[in-house]
Image (cartoon, rainbow, N blue to C red; front, side):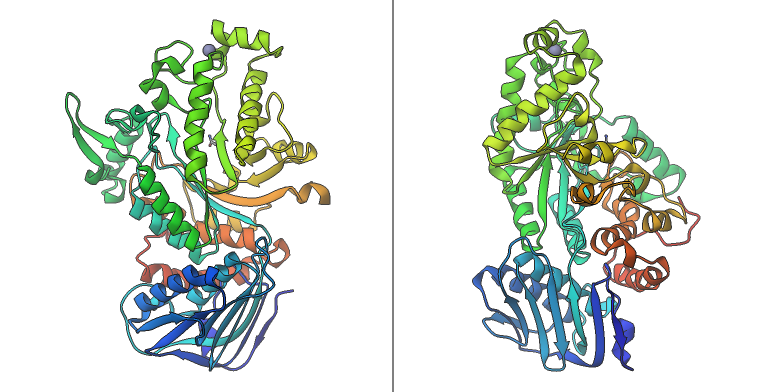
Length: 524
Ligand code: ACM
Ligand code: ZN
């Protein structure tokens, strides 16, 4: 039950929390932030959260703020339970207390605290009178999976740009960052066993169809956000200027650490057996025809070894439970024309090429599990059979039976149907309401099936998103609607209640310099 008990207080107008908390009471009075303020924490494990809050408050207020064991802002771990993301935040004129059973709960409380600050202070430098309104908030998420997927393959985003997105996610309690690190247009993760994958002509490329389209739009619409950034060009001998980039393993560790402080897990995706033209172009022996055309040839042992060695390095880098195998849009017809793949189908007693992909997914799942990881894939991994312990990303909104089928088989599902949650799709003035009012969780599931819905995420495919400015235009404010869909129970989602809070948050996004799409506009 959402409670909003109001006292006559000037602070009230400042309390606009997204996603909507479970209960919120606003009282008279404020806690003024003053020079010398200490942020305390009762457990050493919370030190990174205290430091994160200190850096954030220092940046937005210009005050001198310290960390210690005890402070007027106190972070307190109580009844520890790693899986419990709930928190309570009590602010009165003497201080702020955030209590939670887990680090994640504490950072959820910090996200709320960030939102209790005035919007104009959301970024940069203004020192002086800043106060937190007196509130009591009790809050916990409806879903544990609240994510964004970014595709830095079609267009590249630097470590700094990625961190900026992570910071924006943290403000809205989005806690899963799905990182699509390989595809036809490039390979973005350094793999020590296969250095060719991030060589100059694999991680960089000549302009492709989508790059040229972006440039045409930049010119036609006079829109610099559609230009390909010069900073990602590289002169390559014999090729001229190529476009691209990749993340070293140190870069990846850096991003993982940044995300972890903010309570965000990173789910890496190395897409196999399809959508890996860059790897096949680099190591031609990976493909059926040995000419560099994807998908991977599943008949050859060398391909299986390649997959295992690449994932070995993924497992070592990413400390989290889930790794995505992708598995979408595989041109399986090529396997039916390959003698090696046909031999595999025969020797494994498989019916057809669909079962060949399922064989590969199950085989890799065993490998993932043996390394302490769980496998996740786009909903095509269902075709040809799936083990119960794999998790499915429902993306094909035009296949409404996917969630029904997966959960009936006992598989967990993350919802990201393109009909609602493809943030690269064009927006009009109704898009936000379409997402907010939509039944993203299918209404035909039983209570048992609903337990298998892990949550939802927005996907940002970047064929037509070449810059950070364009990324922000496509993602915001849609990500705020997603955050509330994933955090707040459906019965408490009301557009008329969301809209004024959203409007207040647009000022916050303005202050943060986020170039979001206005609610009403004729601009594409
Ligand atoms: C996808 O959009 N191909 C998952
Ligand atoms: Zn083959």
